[in-house]
Length: 331
Image (cartoon, rainbow, N blue to C red; front, top):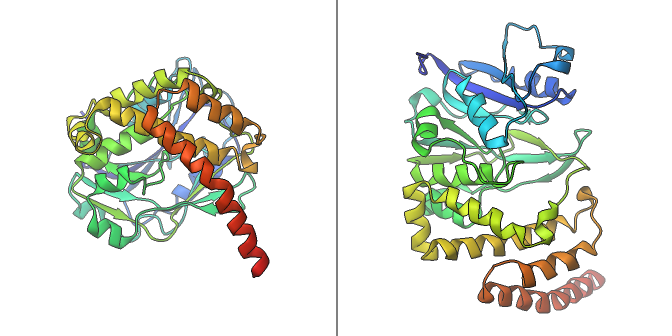
């Protein structure tokens, strides 16, 4: 049996196939010197294949594990990767992202209880490592004023795989990562974040960037958003959320029913995808916004009230656009 208190922090890097970014990710982990750290690279594939190209493949500083089977769904591969680590605390790092040297420097994890969460603040970079934009985290006043789960429902946390450092006890408490239906991990991190925030004792949110997340030009909106299948996937997401009784109770206080939260998530998702389709990084044509709008109003089960809210927002949009242009001309 593993002694999970022996090693302080496990930085777990899940990967499917080798890319040169992986070495940069590993190298950044080596700068986390103020904590007792193990670095675990877990390959979600039959074999190591091209991973021998890594400069760290034979390094005694890195623990390599291979699942030794065909590629597993994201939720399952994350759970298997964590099972292969030994730390009391866990941080998941995508194989193309980077930790900054100030990561965790302000926190003594050995003094925290098992239901503490450390929230990263992230800067978005492009494929060449250039700064793109900054993603938000709650401010100290918001952390002080609101319960952590309330900040989740207010969408103050930018959900990504590396949002939190969490304990193994917390991971076991919420049952790890859940099957959310869509094979590429649709909402798998968001469900986990909602559940740990509902069960946490305290959250520390960094106010300076400690983490760089890479955004590639190949990213884009999933095609299933332009059809009714999104209803099926979102229903599976909400069911996964509801697997945790504490989260379900907190959600019911705000949205009354499971279906009420399902409709709210669809409403929120419309604006997320609308925003994505307006950014050049996703390589999408603006005409796709029309198909997204049609799908939302006709095919998505977002409920009449939320559909009316979107129509009202669209009616105000041209007015606000003209106001912004006029203000620009005046300046």
